[in-house]
Length: 59
Image (cartoon, rainbow, N blue to C red; front, side):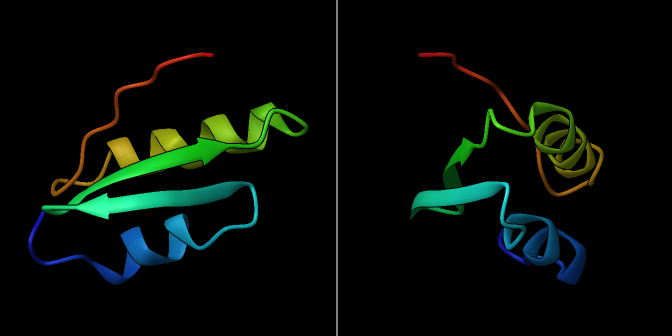
């Protein structure tokens, strides 16, 4: 994911997602549960990008 696309950066900048950290082109993202359907759609959008993949962990 060395070349971050405009689309990826746009999805990551949405207010329902919070980038907690970035290391070696990997992001730790916190998704808002207040509007889970929107957060889920954003994560699916990121996962559909060729340069990205998403794995979820719930706390």
